[in-house]
Length: 62
Image (cartoon, rainbow, N blue to C red; front, side, top):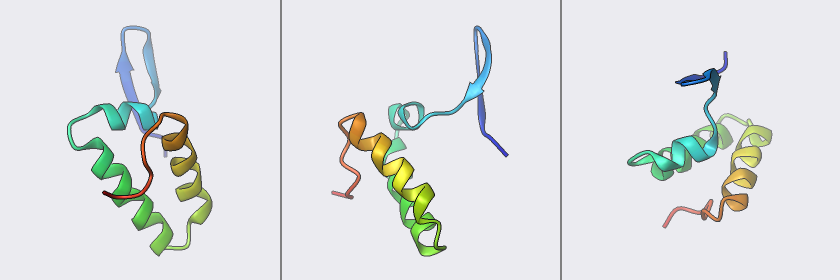
């Protein structure tokens, strides 16, 4: 199931940038990475981590 957000142009997947831009979004991304790793979904956690680095956001919790 893919999360979608509504825009003036329809719907699109919610991106890491969309989440990071929200209040508490970076903390939510860190929690999601931890959750994914704890369940063995390293590929998904690595994907989020790479997107965060590309956006200039530290994937490591402060």
